[in-house]
Image 1 (cartoon, rainbow over the protein chains, first blue to last red):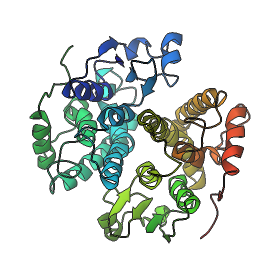
Image 2 (cartoon, rainbow over the protein chains, first blue to last red):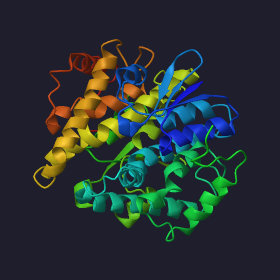
Image 3 (spheres, rainbow over the protein chains, first blue to last red):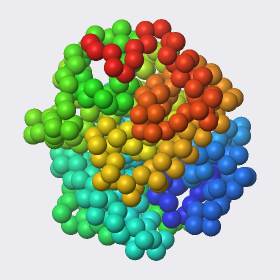
Image 4 (cartoon, rainbow over the protein chains, first blue to last red):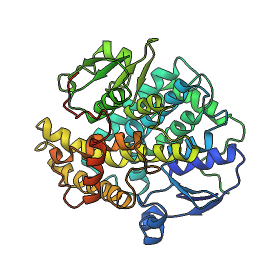
Length: 200
Length: 200
């Protein structure tokens, strides 16, 4: 498998982490979003939506969207529940991640990283407020359970871990979220865990 | 099943359409987002993320996130492919919908509907541009295929249809997207199709 990747991207990290934990060999092709490398004609022929990660399977098929890739890799493994309700619950948290979490928690980190916070100052308070709301929803849930679904590690945890554990880089303070902090440590203690800056 | 619903919401409409097409009986409980009815303590006890749709199953379990609900309802039906790659592809388009389409196409419609366009004027051009980009990605794909995945009607079509066919209410002109328009007509001609304003 060939993974088109951006090293700083939590969405790419989700896939790197899952591939490594499942011991699936893959080739990593790093693209630089800031240099426009995901908008070239060559890459748009691979993923017309112009985003990483994109996973090219051994038969040449390309899959896009980090959480769809996770689901593909998780089928038949312990990282996806074997019940219909369990799978739907995993997807519920993954859609929560992409709609109510990533656009705030990840985007503020990206703006900080790319030096765009001053330009985007007018939008920062709303992003901050909504990111805190997402973290509060996670805290409320994790106060009652060790992992997001069925009390065991799944791709819902991988999806939410990716940007939550580096939320501080976007200016979020995790101190008010002790259950989130404890869950981060549980994810980090999973077998074959690799950090976001692990290089292959 | 009991569906917590907001009549004007495309996300709620996805679930109403799927339930009706699958001939699953359900009770509809309408909440008014504009009156704060999705943020009351009573509703937050049902969905802590404070959003509709939320589907309460017969055993009292609550499922949230429109596309996770669609996946739950689609398992074992013709609306979800029976291959691993097909399911991942359906999810790819559903995550595209929630991340690259809904926050632009649906949000501009909501702002128009709620009389918020003047207040949000500074954000409208970027929302417009990104919404057009999502429609262009759909157009490019639908120029080559009748439906989003495996050339047959699936929950990926339901998810993308919900806000695309009313994009005009948010000021989007579909004239430059003839393949999208033809696909809209194909979806509308499916058995047991109901329009967004169909009342139960």
